[in-house]
Length: 88
Image (cartoon, rainbow, N blue to C red; front, side, top):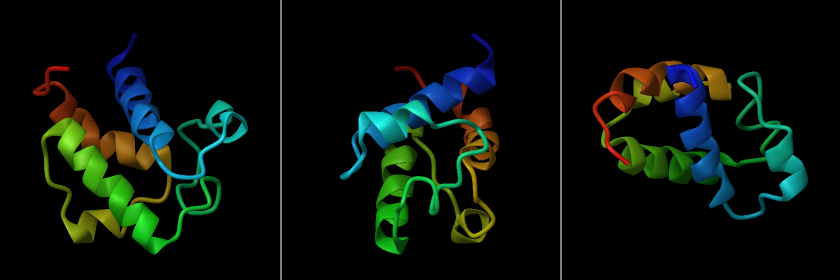
């Protein structure tokens, strides 16, 4: 499995824990999935999601970077450098 696939898999693990996620939604998650529109997350849910990812990846994502993240792929590109440092 490539590094980006591992990161996306770990992101999906966090998505599974979010309130309101159904198997149907989870089955459709791809790097092109829009976090707000496709996952139907409001701003508070997005921040909770980001906080969970920060814990899982042992990192901090600055708010200026969060503002530019729209898709799961965008998020994976931000988290990929940290994933090499994190043990599961």
